[in-house]
Length: 336
Image 1: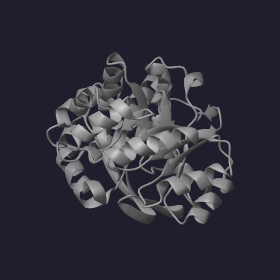
Image 2: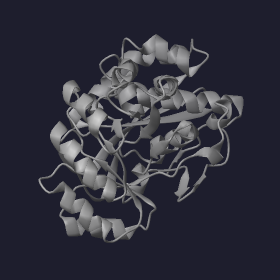
Image 3: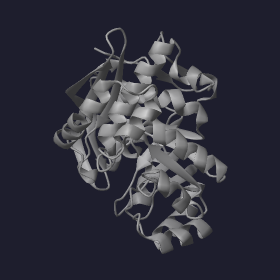
């Protein structure tokens, strides 16, 4: 077994701004696992908010290299368990490895990942397309660039309602909003009333993750469902979110890959919560992996590659109401 680490740059179509950061280029790390006959690809993007860099991800993967290359693991789940202590502080690196392990594992079995998981690709919900924070007229322009039935609007300004009102004038599409922890409980409750009138489907992470008392108020009084993102990072967070959020948004890079991500989704379903998986502006490597587990979901945010000026890979093709997977087994993404 051989582990390769590749660092790539993903140029964005537009400056991408959310409540706590902006970027024009997204740096990403690709893991390639090879057994001599088959190979698997995995990905994790860097993220300054979570302190994840190519340097510390690479360092974590180098510590895991002896375990990985020894090949004493029959399944991705076993490899994940063998390496979990090494990656305790770096789930992003573990995600890249885990995705590559799933790709390799299912290629060796000659099945697609969704087939192995016994999922139906016809059950995949339509992804939203994300509109980052910008001047309102620029947000309108970005929305008009792609006629899409579902937009996720990033908020966290001092004029959030005005933004949504203006965007609503230009489309009949469904809106979702993501405040990225920028609001108070009072704002979220008040805004929810107007946002519901503006055909917003749900609010994602309106409050800071440590404001549990505030989230309880929002959960009880919001006119819209609330979905956890920053409040739901790892498996132990799912139960904590029950009674504070109506659903969870699992980010595979933050959770540590598909292996824990699946456990989180099934746990949320058992608790009667809605499920979502989101991307972190990955290329088609990471986005295609998300698509394979998307039949499990109520909502999905897998528009990462759609936000890029130039992709580094081929993979899943996404249209409104239709997702086309690459031919062949495994996850199926290929570096260009």
